[in-house]
Length: 163
Ligand SMILES: [Zn+2]
Image (cartoon, rainbow, N blue to C red; front, top):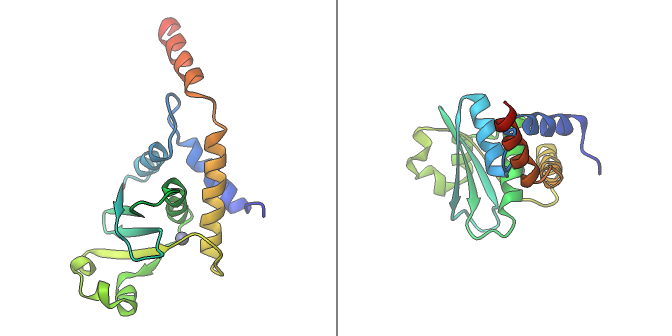
C-alpha cells in the first residue's frame, strides 16, 4: 500500500534535515530532528515487556525512544517511533497508562513523564500505527538510496580545495 501524502511529506521533511555531507544514518537523522525541535531525543535499549518493540516516552523537556534489547530490526523500530513523533501522534497520558498497567502505577516515572506510546510492528487497526509503519518503511527505503559516503567525501574535499 503506498504511503499517504502526510507520511510522504513527513519523510521528505526529515530527510531535508539530513547533514549535507558524510554518512546519513538513522541515528544522525534523529539527532537532526532533535536539533530542529530544540528538544533532546535520547535513544536507549531497554528490557521492555515481552512483545513490545519500542516505546516513545515524552517528558516535559525531552523525549526518549526505548528500543527492546536484542531486537534484530531495531532500526526499523527506531524509524517507527520517529514516525510517531514527527507525525504528531501524542500517545496516551501517563495517568491513563498507569490505570492500564499496575507495573507502571508503582513506578516513580509517573511524576515527570507526560505521555507514552508503546507498541510493536505488525498489523494493527489503529491508523497511527499504520502511519508510523508506512513512515518507517519509506524512510528506510529512501535512506538506502541516498548517494554513497564516498561521493559525499569527494564533494567535501573539492569544496575545501576550491572554496
Ligand atoms: Zn507504534
